[in-house]
Amino acid sequence: MLWNLVRRHGLFFAADDGGGAGGGGGNAADGGDPPATGDGPGSTTGTNNGDAGGEVTFTPEQQQRIDALVKERLERERAKIKAEQEARQQRAQEEAEQKRLADQAEWEKLAKKQEGQLSQIKAEKEALEMAALRSEVAAAVGLTPELAQRLQGSTREELEADAETLAKLLPPDPRPAIAVEAGLPKELADRIKRGTREEMLADAQKLLKFVQKQTPGSPAGPARRGGTSGDGELSEEDEKRIRQRFRIG
Image (tube, rainbow, N blue to C red; front, side):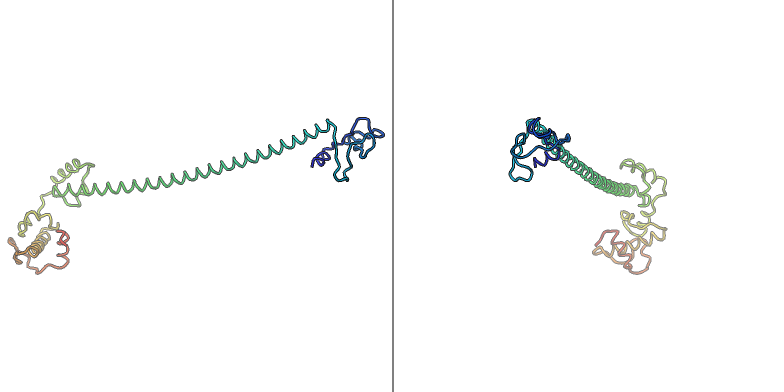
């Protein structure tokens, strides 16, 4: 390998400056003849290229030139290997950073989605709680469920004040008087379905009949006051509706 490197760079020098016939000991790179081989005067020690196991010797200047070339080549190889390693490390770092950013973006997207879902659930929960509070406040002052949704306010106090104001603008609830007329306790007046006076009275009479039927020992006949409309037994639909109203299984 060393000999090939020497030949590639034309390092053929005479063993001494005056040897060889006709000045043939010159540098081959300068146009002179290659160094003589053999055992004659002025020739380098060793054999020619064809002799196996031959030894080639160089002058100190030649050896210094060869060492410099070898060192230069080794430095180039080391620099090349180092540059390749740095390039691989740089690519690996860039790929890792891209993966980290992609994972971070995915996590941020997922967190944002979950945050939106939680906000929606919270809003729905607050809306249900507010609707229940409106219904409770409205019922306390005798307002219908339809009017309960019209109440304005974000706190119980605000809703109660608005409900009282609205109740003063409405005519008195006729159901307590109708309940008494039909023979129902006044406390059951809010169980009567709203409608015209005739419809509310008919509903109160059906409610009374159901109460009499469900109360042990209660006479199943005309109401104590006003009586029934004489329309016979309750229909299954009426009985089902009254059961749901009283929460009877």
